[in-house]
Image (cartoon, rainbow, N blue to C red):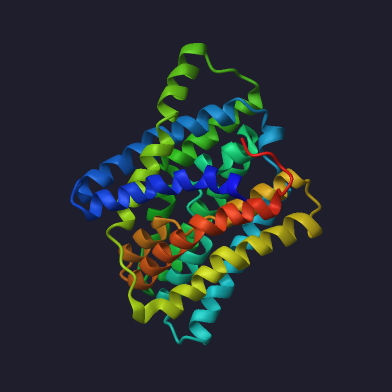
Length: 312
């Protein structure tokens, strides 16, 4: 257990550093946003493109993993949304915002720095499939359900943003190169490796800067705690059931899927709620609470899944 903590806590410490820097005034929100934009638009795509291109598509993409992970994602979304409407009396838009917070993990920013050291570079494929499931599907579904009834052009705007998403474009490009078996030229590979090496620190620091602007309203604690239970308990458990007992995937896919599902809520869920002016305060609380809990829960989950595995 201590080995997994020693591996994971420094990563969450960088998030904490970004939080402290923002709260103490060492950086402004604009600086945090700029660092995050660099990570999202350049560093993370470079890393994923290089890793995906280096693997044959048959090894990096497993259709049963994608289907099982997506199925768990949709079940969590539907369950939390129905619960928020039926039990808490939330309106459709607010319930959809809370559901998106429970179904959208921070697999883009936290996935690579946490999963690659634990599971090796082969984990790039599952990370990419989790990003496609949670970013593409949850954002599209959440946008439609959060938008006011009768609002036009929502799907068109969502599809346009997804088609221009640099991370999704990098995944598609890397998968195409891997499928064709085309190696990257050495200078291009070194360029992508150098640029991609900055993805982890910049993304994590920027994440901390975003968290530093969020707040946890005590009046929303029950709502936030319920959504966090869906995110950090129900989601990983559903992924384990679907990928393991039901689909019979090998241990690598099951472990990686569960660890991806155990990621805290992505700040994109808060951005989405803000965009549609619904449930932003509740989602803010979910993001903060899930990140704090995951800093301990994630290494514990990794330890439970691989008790005999050596930690690098």
